[in-house]
Image 1 (tube, rainbow, N blue to C red):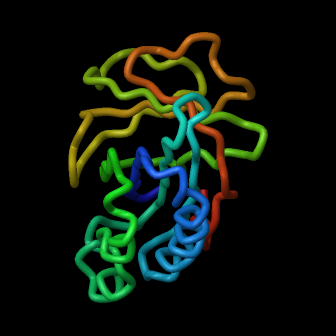
Image 2 (cartoon, helix red, strand yellow):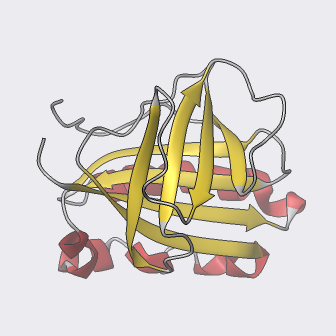
Length: 174
């Protein structure tokens, strides 16, 4: 598989009174971004533990997509979400380099996302380590695991998510 980029957007949403409206807007925005050439997949998640913690995970063919006129015209980079910005306690955007498909998290599964500084640690079976390459660069590496049940205890620097949308988009070939 060719080199791909994962774009992860994380939010801690502080306004419960806007949350339903924001989620409806974000569902539409997911479709808008998937209409931008270079966006291959998109899926949204909600934390299984922290109230109002969300993540969107997209596959793009290259970081160049974020410089395209089509992306900018579609409201990329936060332009479309201006009216909700005051409700973002956290707004983190990271790019990660990958050489294999990211997990498609089913409706009964959990996605464990663990930030780590160690890019050489041995990985357990089913764990995918991805390398941060752009935007906020809040972690050097991130490990992704799809689980059938939430972990008994979360590892340090990790969040467990549930999918709130199916993985969407013109899925790439594996």
